[in-house]
Length: 459
Image (cartoon, rainbow, N blue to C red; front, side):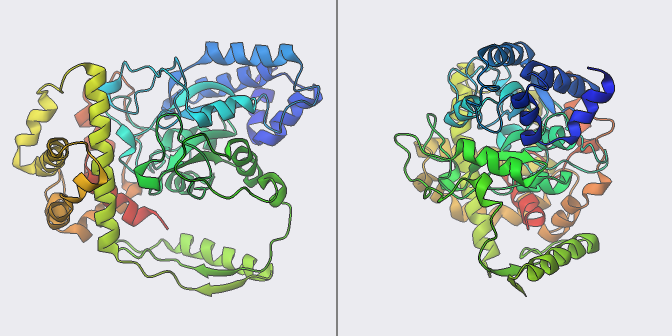
């Protein structure tokens, strides 16, 4: 296969590439090797932070040798090269850092239920993608691995927390990659990178064996794709429940891949072009795109109206703060168990003592209070809810390189076009703090940052 063919494959979606394997026109091994060439050609994006080439080659070779794909005994995705987000998609025996320095040597001991479903569908896993530490940010620039670059422009963030997966798909490395979404972690990167990003309904997939759900049911696992049919095919592959799940979604009447070919009944659809949260106004090009979509939907027979649900923005921000504080306390416990000790007093931690880093100190204090409260449950976190609410404005206002009130912070975060990832160093960067200052979301590594980012990014 010459270079032209390798990069021409990038224009085919997953279903089309799988059809090549099923017809005998190509093998799963050939598809994988082409994807590896494309990955190596896009290393500067820093989308993939763990290479699993050997395991991918073994899986592809076994799939080719079995003949199951060409015998028609597989689904519509068999033989497709696939990447896993390095958070929420554990693969037994593979690195699993979750963007955290504390887990830089952590290796998963078991595979997530959803990953087993991917493998059962014949997806060939050959790498893991970058994610912010513990999924806490709407950008992807962990100090451990460095920032991921948006393939459309180095001056625009690829979003987060599934930013590595989004960048890899948008660059054509793979037709699809896994992701997870609690408060926009699939949808934000999809918007930043021009992809299809669906957050499924609660209970559509399982978090087994590690948990019953994530963020009290707010998180759902799925994928970033370039076509709707790939998203549907992947959802068919992972839809279902595992023993012990606290709840499940109703079984669809027909497979999603079939459903997208059928004309739905007329729906009443509200079109909103502004965020319910205060902050920067929606860009005119985005408004125009949403309005064009509304026109298309109206032409298909749906009832399209302007409007949006009314929400209590303070209550939403408070709830997200509580959920992420609980999640981070639990992940801190995991990191402590992995290290066999509490975190040491590193130079980064000493910087928390500076007045201009009061936000980081506040979040660290919140996590410590959660641990002191006991098991780190929702009830325990609720005891701290009032403190988080009262301090939120001060936390954002005192963050590094930020001043002013919450609105000013949101305006700063919204100026993603002013941030550049072109000079971001890779994982061996000796100055992660300087890199973050050049490239990062200035609110820093705090729950407050996630609140602000989601408030200005999710539509």
